[in-house]
Length: 163
Image 1 (cartoon, one colour):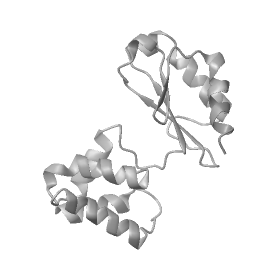
Image 2 (cartoon, rainbow, N blue to C red; image 1 turned 90 degrees about the horizontal axis):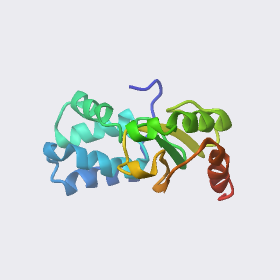
Image 3 (tube, one colour; image 1 turned 45 degrees about the vertical axis):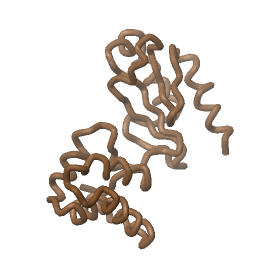
Image 4 (cartoon, one colour; image 1 turned 120 degrees about the vertical axis):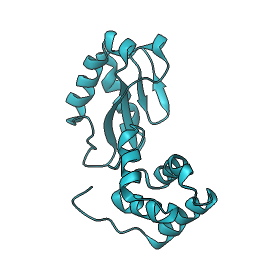
């Protein structure tokens, strides 16, 4: 799963076990448990998946399969300001690729990478359901519509100034 191990803090481990317990350790609640776990840790490293598997009494392979199947879940830490570019049909047709290229160029990152300072990460998603605003970019929970490549630097600067 990953080349290095992270050590879960005792407090985080207890919180994760409480989350599992809040869903009655029911294997049918795996996706809900993973959503909660990701909101706690920011991502789902192998160590978190192992605890979830143990608590819900299911194979780690099943947990891993769910984590890798759904694009919402990630096994890599995202930046404090995760940037997601929609590459669904409407956004793609209206130039999402050029917008994505501009984010990659300015931040010197590829899709799936996080900046060294932990501030930004770039990902693509399939559709955010705002096709009338295509191309759409999300930074965290904030949605930007009709984004052109010229606006990319301004969006990035908005978050660089937040420190």
